[in-house]
Length: 164
Image (cartoon, rainbow, N blue to C red):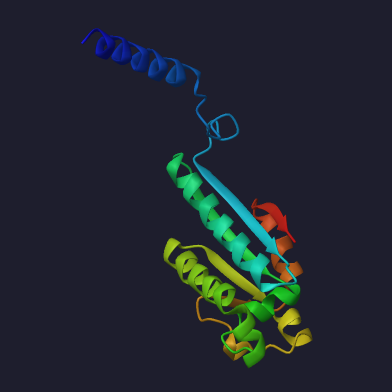
């Protein structure tokens, strides 16, 4: 019984010590006084795996804002080779090799749409990379020029987050 008491006391001290020393991880200093965060993500990747990974990271960023009481107003602008990975029509060999990543990308697109995140794809890029605009998911708007769009969003006070 004496050992049980010591064990209880020891575990209580350990729990209290770790709780007191645990530093809360958040962004409250950077978000001090901010109610809304306007961002525009420039997304330019050369492979499907990296595209899928960072779309999940951006989903986490959206959730992080919400969890910390800040309304995220996000825009994703896809340029360059990345537009190939958004298409619902892929070369069969490429699709088989990247099936998991391509499915993840399509899932992220649907999630962003549900969250109210605006997504845009550059028509210059779809032309350069021979992507049929009809194969771009309906949740994504096709814009004439991704660079013009980026400048427009930044002029409207969205903060640029370049990811490449």
